[in-house]
Image (cartoon, rainbow, N blue to C red; front, side, top):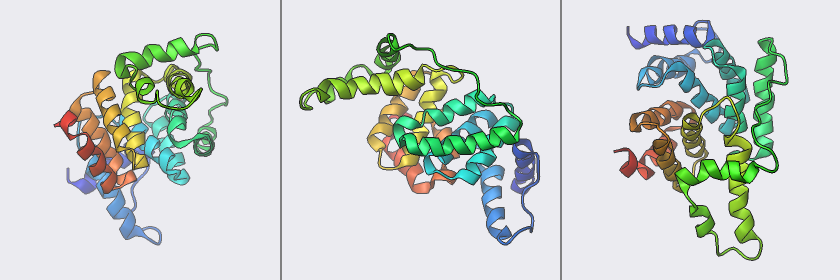
Length: 250
């Protein structure tokens, strides 16, 4: 198949429809977009359609691009991803982009769920209690990242030297990474994508590329995820992520 045929096939698989031919006011632009994303990038590398759509939802959440986010949540459902998993992908962006932006993305996601006839709220995914929160977060954090943050920020004044690393353990790892419906391998790979899409977080990108490899992602999978994110986050952010992680991925 040529890329036009591939685009048509992939678009149907994801959205159950046909790509733009000459419809609308900007058919030329849409042909460029769709043939590149769905006729080339979507066929490059080993990741399946489910993981690619979760990557796409991640970047669109970071970018706050709601019409596209709603459409790709629909694509997630169309390829068989359970709504609880889509929810986790959006939820786990909160420590990186903040609560207000995540709430905006949740609203767009829920719009797609309602359109698909999915009853809300979804099944509870919590696994920790107030009492177990720190220990559960540390159990995920320590094997991959050790106590680097605690040591790095020991210089902070007063209670902040204790509070900042504890917040990381309890908030990032316990409140989100312990939840059901998304595994550690997938969470780490998607965290790399969140940080790459943000831009300006290359130190954290490199750290989480290392973490993604430690929990079972291959170098090819990490590169494939970043390349798949590129049409949504832009070429410069792809190159920044690849450059800062070169020694880990080469």
